Image (cartoon, rainbow, N blue to C red):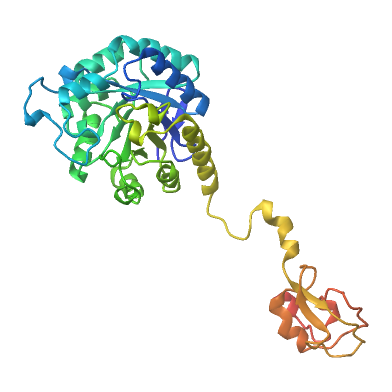
Length: 358
């Protein structure tokens, strides 16, 4: 599987997962709060922060009808007018340069999700290292073509997309001359449940689409994200908030700073734990083999005396013959006097023959 560079970070199966803190609209259109979020994300150890680049007018129409209201009663935003919601959640364009620069000064990569072609042009002026295509925009092929044509890596959330739609998005990027593609398994409900996350799709996606796969996680907590690492996720995106109780458009399913710290630590541990296919114990386990069992004399034995269950026993440590030879020992006699506590070895057996070859 190929590796992809995003700024100074390398994404691929040989590297720790790339951790992205999505600010979304949780800044409540307060620039100082947004900067505090960037600082807290850096302190938590993430690799990147991400914004969303749109205006309410680029997302929908300012028409007051049910067509432009959220109808799902189980939605966090039930009844909200789309234009008003996007107006409230948007990140002002004039903030982008300052937030990106601040993030870079803290050692973070900083990029955004453009929601229309004009947003790509704007982000190009800020020299972003990559582009993120949101799950709801995966079928916006003109947008994908525009972003792909920049030559920069594309991270594309798949959400509710079918296999054919995912392939079409990838093909569009390829046709624009861009093969630097990472796709993210994503469940486009807010919040998402663990039961609807279906992480087993990650290795299947990697095989079907022949590109690195990560996770855009809208569940609460970090468990689902950490589990994705075991299935090969090379990137994890989670929404970020300083304080869930203070509110924010996505606060309900966003992580706070201490939770992001836990995610960074746990995902790195999960990645290290993958290791490689190995049998026979690791080098770190070498000394532990001492505490396996072996055959010992448990009472004094005279030369010529037969070995019995009364005078030999399988116990720890592993200084004598392995337990698999116990029947052979019981079929033999002692070649010499043996004191209790002696580890039994081949020279102690009269009938050893070529047994030690086995």
